[in-house]
Structures are given as structure tokens and as C-alpha cells.
Picture (cartoon, rainbow, N blue to C red):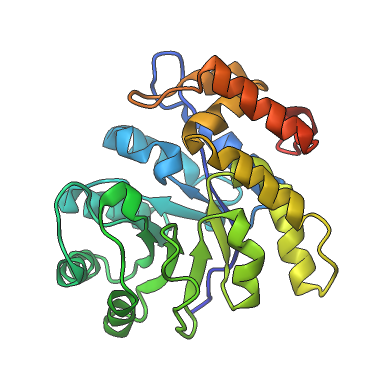
Length: 294
């Protein structure tokens, strides 16, 4: 089975003025990211406001996404607490030939490793043909994967548990599993990760850093000197000073006002923070006008 590798953006979702999902523009943005250097795109991750978007809108987008010229390059996030809704959304995706999924354990309730094993077991029992990238982000769901839990899941389901997105950063330096994809959630850990055997990254800021991140990745595998990694990491550090979703929508809205639309309780940056964001990025000669995203 082919290992999933490369630079992946956790893609933004684009909304219309009534805060309904704009399916056409969301897919266009994802395709632009692939054209700009991403090996693929994760749809409906946390960056895509997945937890706030209705199941019906997700189904509509996935149906249209299946017609994309890059349909084999997408990872489908679920962003759902309900086990049955997660399984149903995955079944629809499978019927449209999407097999790679990014799945975080449910939020709100407290639980441990055995409960997480049971959760993914229930999914895989229903959808044995799926391939799941575990989403490790304690800040969002309240649970942090242990090294042992991931190893046990892979041992039990070697064909279905194929990778992890590590946004809690307690796994990417420790896990050593053959034919298993490991993706740190930050550009700042891309090069370090590649040096220790990680597969690439899945990140929010690849919505704007795709060309830089791809160059770091390609230069590493082509044994070339790293000429843009410092800038890539510095850009990520600027965005990390703010809520990532707010900062990305604020940044992209300078190019297209539609990015100003964002679902409550999320919001754009305040005028003070917006000014700081653009000032800091200007110091790095990183601005909306020199992005290669269309």
C-alpha cells in the first residue's frame, strides 16, 4: 500500500455572505494549493472550520470534489463528534472513491487510550476499506495520543491506520513504525521531521506557504542546500502569534473579500492584530501580492 507523503495544506473553507459554504470557491482554492506546490490537500480539517459546517454542506462539497482533476490528492476530514455521522460521511466519501481520512477523536468528554482504540475500531468495522490518518491535537479535542496507543492501533489495523498528523508534537520524534506516515503540523518542524524520517507536513499555513514548503521538501530529497527554510519557519512564527484561522482569513481577504466571511465563534483579527500581522510579514518580504496561489 502506498505511503502518503508530501506537503499537505489543511485547506480553508470559503463561505458566502450568508455564511453558507461556497462549494465552487472552496474547491478552486484547494486546486490552487495543489498547483502552487502541495502534494495534496486535507479538506474539512480544523482549519476548514469543519466542526462548524453542517453535514449536508460537507456532503454537497464531497460530491463536487469527486469531479476535481486532483480527486486522488485529497484527504477528507470529518470534524464530527457523532460516531454514526462520522461513519455515514465516510461511507459517502468511499462511494465517491475517497479512501484517505483525517480523523480526530471526539471532543468534550474525557477518555483514555482504551476508549480511543474502541472508537477507531467501531469505524473500521463499518468501513474496512478506509485509510485513516490519526489527528493528534490535544488543544482541540482534550485527548493526546500516546505512543503506545498509536502503536496498538497500527498493530490491530495495519491496513487502515496509516498515519498521524501530530499537532501536539509528542509523537513525531518518537514513533518508528514501518510504512506509516508521520506529519508534524507546522512548517517549523518540516525539515527536522524529514531528517528523522517523517513523511512531510499537514498544516494550516500551507494555505499561504505552499511554494516555500514544497521547495524545502524538494531540496531535501534532491540533496540541495536549503535556501528558504529560514523564511518558511519565520512566516509560520508570525502566524503563530495569532489564532491561525483568523490570521489566515484576514491575510487572504486582502486578495479576495470573500475570505472575510467566517463562522461564529471565529472572527477576523482585530485592526491592531491585523496591522501587526502585515507589518511582521512585510519584514520578511512575504505578502499577498507575491503568492503563487492562482
